[in-house]
Length: 493
Ligand code: BGP
Image (tube, rainbow, N blue to C red; front, side, top):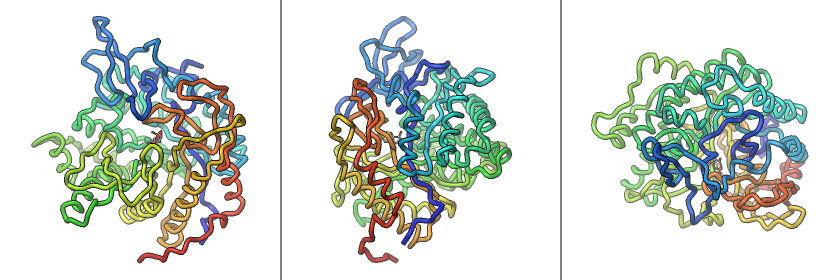
């Protein structure tokens, strides 16, 4: 069994977890610039100021009180401000990526580098130029740029003016930004993602999408669907060779038992993901949408999909399904879903990482089949990886053999999905190709990369890059893909 020659191999990052340079070259503030550090035991917090000057703090998942605006607290460390200094070291990092023989790099555009508040009439040239140089450098190294237009972020000015995606006004701001980048990079970027993990929008109230109640989530999602569809149609018009997707957090939930109620509950939980991709890939709302609206919003609650909206959704449906795959869970009728619509119930058959994320290589073959059966469109695995505590030496080297095993086990399952199940998978970008700030906890200690960074949880360190044993392994894999061997598991039909 072999991966197709055209299969793209690479890694992924997101701007506010990687770049830093938060006040350079005209960049405006994002809501996530106000989110403190944290760890497994302490949640990330946002400090706010009320109109009368009173200060307060809330968890980053909660709404700010009415009339409050986020503000900085000089005693707090904000990881996004300097992150791992990718803004200044991107070309060094591309050199290291290319050194492994990789063929794709997924990164996200910082909205406020392009439009510092979201409301300007014209884009900030310094921001456009910065990403142009990144794209040109990738192409010079024969790597495809895979561009996420918006990764869980919004300019703070939009959050303050109309609560982000709660308002239809956000659609125009997004489309203006998206058109500016598409106009500038068309012909160079073949793969675009309109949003990251759009089905997790309910978790990102203070990261800037909207207030945290569920019905507002559905309204915010509707506005994001329209923004994505308008952008997709535009990309197709100006660059017919380009392909457009959106990224969905897709780790499977399994029924905890064979009790029919648990199996039915699992299907309902899965619909909270497929709600998003059904609209965006098929181009229309699924039959079960009203059930979800009423379940979360109460009797009579619904999204008003006008004729004009329906037309936009249909004309701007996506070309491929891209997804993140990290941690599978189980559900039964008693399961309480968390902010990310994930069940916290662990699977007793699976080992976990130090952060309690179950490791389930077969789950990636499962989800590839599940999604392809539903849509029959190409798939792209744009996030998967192992966050662990790596013990780096003074050169940044670590023998991360646990990560190599993780990759071998997942790669074998992806290969089976392609070769045995005949699923068209475009590529794989490991999260994060380089150590960077964790989204959920704000830590540096949770490391994912092939490339290491000398930095601790509070930003101390030289930020110099090093290479791990997994870097050497990936380089060897790119030269000879048979090194992952075969396993003896039978073809399951
Ligand atoms: C995804 C996000 C990424 C990334 C990843 C790992 O949900 O798209 O931005 O951070 O999860 O999560 P964490 O950083 O919390 O370990």
